[in-house]
Image (cartoon, rainbow, N blue to C red; front, side):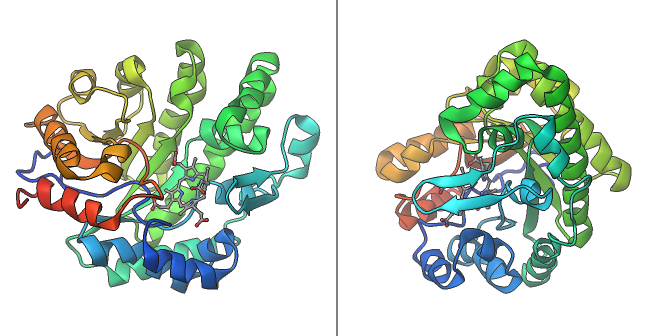
Length: 337
Ligand SMILES: Cc1c2[nH]c(c1CCC(=O)O)Cc1[nH]c(c(CCC(=O)O)c1C)Cc1[nH]c(c(CCC(=O)O)c1C)Cc1[nH]c(c(C)c1CCC(=O)O)C2
């Protein structure tokens, strides 16, 4: 929280995107009992346990709520399934006809178990540790809603944005409203900060990026702060690269995430000195471990020395990551290994 307030700490706080998940044996054990992935997201007792697992094991400085960005379309009435080994599948929303079948407003009752998880985690977590809530950015969530899946399939959303910009704008606007309500509910339940994940924004050309990533995220931040004044927000437009300066000039977040392929020194010159930067150790270096991981940690710390910083990865922890390598990263960053 101090880093997000613009303080430069001698040892930066550490958390990792996807710090809870399948690379941890204790997660796999609980996941096997939970049934489906979404069942786990909506079971407060188990979701609390999964959120806390990496904190117990590695003493990280922040927990991130165990949930998913796709609970928002789910609570808007879209069918969402997680197919084992393949990832998420949604019934695509490609035009006004399907829009009509969605709910007018996000069903916050449906997400009550998520907010209950937030308050349980906050109660169990020590005061020195922050709890981060999150949502997907409107654009990234829209790519799943329109394409019905992730990955290469952002083309359907981008095509819709070119062919029928008014329809796409309507979807984005609905997602800004729904996501603001979801973030506000998490903050009111006890989240200390929230992160907005725009995982696919970096692929957009500058004009589309400004319209579908930057502006909706700025609007989302403002709507959240209108209800929770001073809310601490981290915006992660993954792969923004040279577009980060424009993004950070418009988006009033307290911290900005940096991706693996981006240069932290360039990012540093792109944001105000008082805005924290978060990143950007290569998740593959975390898989490799050893001297390569030490070097990756040292490079990130050196690149952001004297700037408010949160040490993280440039994207999520990969499934094949040996858990001991996360312990190594923490030790190295704290100057003990
Ligand atoms: C795009 C996106 C999604 N979800 C998320 C994003 C944005 C971040 C990014 O770019 O990775 C965000 C997310 N997903 C998950 C979290 C929980 C908190 C954390 O530990 O970071 C967070 C913050 C858990 C999860 N979300 C998912 C899992 C794996 C599910 C399982 O246990 O089977 C976890 C732990 C499933 C998921 N959820 C999503 C996909 C594409 C997948 C399938 C990929 C995979 O299977 O690894 C959508």
